[in-house]
Image (cartoon, rainbow, N blue to C red; front, side, top):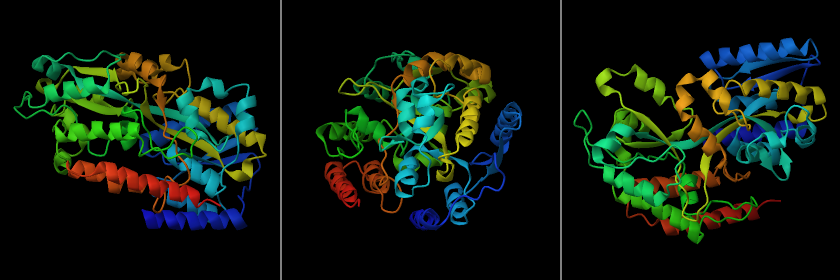
Length: 427
């Protein structure tokens, strides 16, 4: 992956310095997407609707890139065939915007739009495209973490389940998980309180102590702060107490979600898009269980947070002065709001039951969670060759999962210094 990213960076830098986007037909805009299969078919329907409503003023054409998406985007840019619009996940936006200079600044368009503006978005969602006092894209989806739980296992163990908008904290989460661990399910299999195998991401646990990797200023490293270490203490406690299966055996069932589906984990920290409802419905009658929902626990400092995976549509730099390109992107974004769960804008959760009736019972938890769901404070140094994220995974999180005696405090301190040095190398 590091080699791929290095090639990507070199190709895109070559484009940035020497090339420009080659749009042959005025008013025709290409959209690069990773969507395939059913998702692509559904997206095409939305694009067709946008094009029809544009009445010839503009047209969007989809370019589906089903594999090696970011590598292919870099190749297109290097060949001066960059897509006019393309999808980016939140952690990559700063690198494309700042280091590669490949994105259009849409701040003025967004702030002056009559159909969509900053106030329409949940604060934690729009922040995912914000860097260096600039907005770089339009989020079209939010997928915040919630706690799914097995009501039957809670009842069996005599443990009180959390409510759909509970203010429970991480101490309560750990206590409940410990009380549930060691039970047996309907098949006689041992039950764990939860399952942690690199998911959820390490930010979740840093936040649990009131800490973070990077502060709100997107520059100050706080990974080694007292609050962040308290968050890592929470993670270590869960691993040491054995309330999650050992890292080395999680894949034995096929993945972390399978532990929950097979009733061998009583709680699962997953995104609101996870389709447990549909899977339970398809189970044999004796394997079905009652599904419950709760928000992520309150952090030790009293704050609330839920990691929110987001994706945005961005404009290529060559379209920065083309208001029609932004208009087309905005029109498509508004269409997607009625398609994806959960919509990243306020007062839209009533549409969830229409697009996915299986999620109707979850709406109170989704509405509650979106009030405090957030992205990480991502910077250009986060991803890529020898980036901060790699160090967090390989030198901290993975080591904690493998060895409960691992010195995670010293590791956090080392990565914090490494991160400060990276930021200090900026020109």
